[in-house]
Image 1 (cartoon, rainbow, N blue to C red):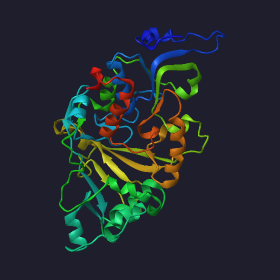
Image 2 (cartoon, rainbow, N blue to C red; image 1 turned 30 degrees about the vertical axis):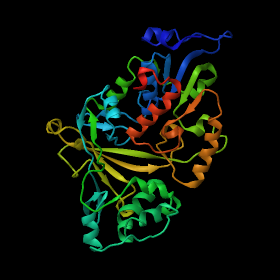
Image 3 (tube, rainbow, N blue to C red; image 1 turned 135 degrees about the horizontal axis):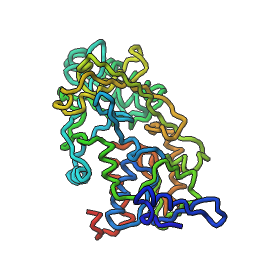
Image 4 (cartoon, helix red, strand yellow; image 1 turned 90 degrees about the vertical axis):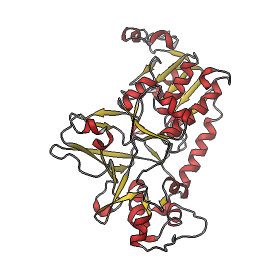
Length: 395
């Protein structure tokens, strides 16, 4: 049985991990705090514990750290976000200071468009578009307390606007009629009376200079990490003395024995256009009309790199994203927003909450969507249960 900090400092030291159990069949690991998953939630918790001097080990079943917060370079030199666009933004001085410990950021404020009636239109929906198509004195279509996503959307906009911008996109995204989705999902967008082009208005917005792969590697620097290691396949051979922090799917942790929670993911197809400088006016173009194809959006990554760098690159890379229902838990991305899955999640949560020393958290563990800054803030809050208030890592 080995302590984590004793063995994970070099490739040679990794070989020492292969200490066998008395029957010479399995290796055993014991550590104070075991974090399963190296995405934003797991990495933030690991960083806080490590900074406080706690013995910590991170297990990651992928070949790289960072979970979905990862990117890579196309041969053209254009950086691609491997698991879809990640825009870091926050209004919190504390969160901005925290992430800047691990990376320098260059300014990037996401501006999105939707391809509607053969034109690029603002997203979120611009007031000028509504006035142009519906009239100056428009009213929302639905009044009262919304009971589903369609009603919640119509409580913000006329029927025509809903059908052009929201209905098709959402039904492609989730694979079901919009009226089957939770009303709370509509809180993720708004209707703007002005023509503000930015997606969000946070005080701090940017992308890491060395990419998200660099950010996540830096966040985990000095912390023992095992990649290509699936905790669920070796769980009987790993002991966490004080805390097991699991950031994977909560239903998978329990072997799906109450049934599977529903998730959605994306199938991504890259296209390199060598003789085109830019193919669309912004980094993300939404595709709400089903008649324009099954993909929900197209990303043009060259928009997301600094202009002085982009000017030296030949061509551009586009990525079409089409939403699918994955069967592999490693491809889960979006918890499904309906009442049936919310009820099933609560059953799993009730079980997780009574397991000693277990914390199931993160987007998949808590079965809810978190923006990047929300994930970091939530992790900072949760890690407090392991650290006294006077600990410097709490500041």
